[in-house]
Length: 284
Image (cartoon, rainbow, N blue to C red; front, side, top):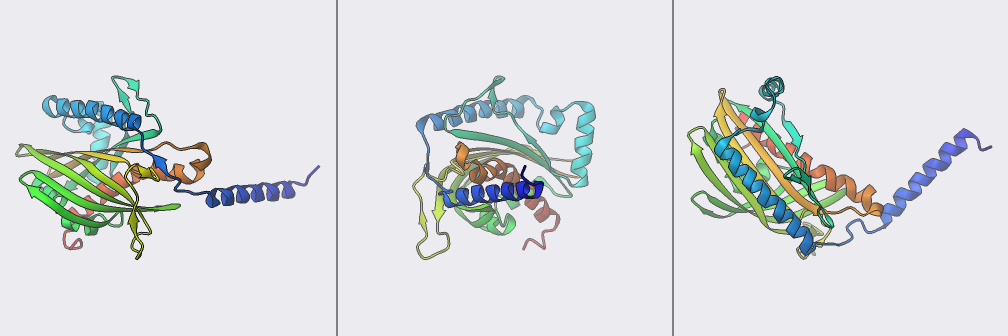
């Protein structure tokens, strides 16, 4: 019978060999974006648009206000303490889980409270796209306002994420803001272009073709709600992203990136916005 120490050593060697083999495989093996994958995402986004419109019109305006009374009170207490409230939204249409061929839709919702901040303060920060690379670093490495016409904004953002893999993406977004009342505003944004960047910040940097890349981000829609009350402003954001499916053999490498980054990115975005509004001098 093999000694337990030898068994542990053998198992450790096996894990090391497995991990080395995984690293030797191409971690960014191209994942092709198929028509059926896009159609599934569009179908879900349209259903979410209808829900968003309904809630804006008939309420509840904030997700927190839709929760049972006891939970609602606890959530408001968390928010006033400075916590970010985060929740995963099931990817369903009329109670039915949505099938996404060769892809995954991630839907996360987050809420923060910024004491002392007005809606005007909050919108001024979020619409300052030229400085998003400073406000939302390190997730945003470059930023630039491309077009502004009234409540319409088009901007360029370079996303940077390092988590086992390092992934850099050049993205273009269109956002529309709408004032509902002196204390409520909404915004919707979506990506119009996403290119994965190969050899970023090097002389031979290049953009991979859209939909023929690592598949770490193929679509991103954001739904924002702003409400000024309780001596500050509540900010709610829903992020809906489309990524590649995860082949079994690539799951140890690709899986942690694909599944955890949407939630982390939303938390970082809201956390950085709160920090910048609470300490504006430090954000200069």
